Image 1 (cartoon, rainbow, N blue to C red):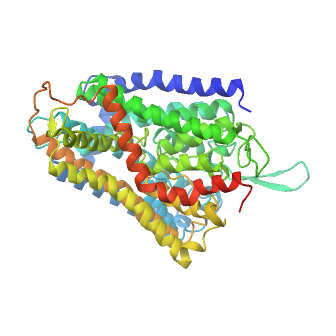
Image 2 (image 1 turned 60 degrees about the vertical axis):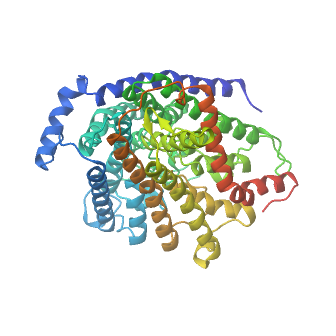
Image 3 (image 1 turned 180 degrees about the vertical axis):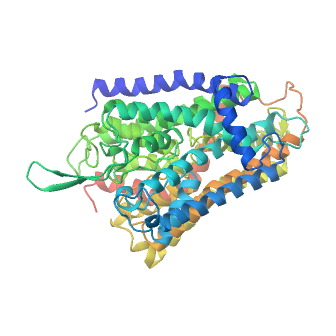
Length: 564
């Protein structure tokens, strides 16, 4: 049953998030509002040297097309470099285990995965990737993919507050400050704490140890703590080891478990308040944060009640299957809800072993577009897409031109808004359907019945939502799944980024309409209620049939004593 210390941990987690997010958000805002800080003295010099080397002008203003071109080019180069160092990893140093080159479809999938901030892994890290690939490839992309998300958010915010401008900022300036001033310092602090608690960080070869029964066991090592820190802070989620944060070498004790969970949501939540500072509206930030927190807590409560309720089929009222005894049910469910709400994807328990309703919440968090805090930067610009849609619907209801913070939302903006909402959803459903009607797709399914269906729909929800967590059971390391999930990641990432930048460019050119008595307020409880309704209705209408065929019917069958 639910224990008092479980309730305390959850309340402590929520309290830490609510207290720290506004503080960190305010600090980040100072960086992008070009206020003097300590990081300017050190990282400012590094920026100048680095970008002078590549002949990049950090002060050059960009319109949305130039901004998008630079972003896409940078990401494409990242995919190519990461792909190449994987397929030739045996020729590079820092490979003490002499791991062979990575198979090409897997290398392509992994390259796309980490560049799109998805970190979907169809491989076991300790038996597939060398130390060099983990550090120079995966960890580097953990930083710059998160920085790309922040850059898009900044561009959209500038578009909203701009007055008859043709510029939405400079991509390279936004990226460098995101990485050097925010992600790197936070990751260094967390990595040091993790190492102090027992997370491994070494270049030594794997160790062979004698077990109690006299057999031999290989203990994988590596520079893990540095990658784990940014995988959590940057909402990346790719584990250094196959068992991810369920493995003691990644997540040694309850303290590291709490800090890693807090790191998942802290930066996405903080950027809400950064956005509030940039647009000059604290109320707007608190409205958005409140909607995110409400959706998060609602999903968490449903998941916990489902996990602790009596399961007649399994004859238990606490489902410990697939969970670490060190952490228990409450910590596992808090993690599963956080990681799927935040587009993080790391796990400390196997999601395939979740109760059907808890698995449903994990899927729904991703299906809604990863906007319940979401990825670093991407969660908030995804939420802003839903805000534009809510304002537009509200305007239609009262027969008035929709406005958001003084910017009119017209046909151009709403077309891009609808595209940003539909593309990830279409990707989830079409690729899932393709997998379920083809021999190549069905052959990868482990379980029968609705649970097997859930394996597929979860995989493409994770890929299209740029989450990266796996339901387990599905054999995803095949040419079919490596290619289809890779394309789903690309659609899910750039199918939202490009519309956001197009909207930013359109907004920047417009003048700000003065507030009047007829202006729809977007910072009060009523608007928060409407926004929540639009999010839930769109998610329900789009994915309810799929969820009915998977976790919902599995829940009803298990209660009837039927399993698969």
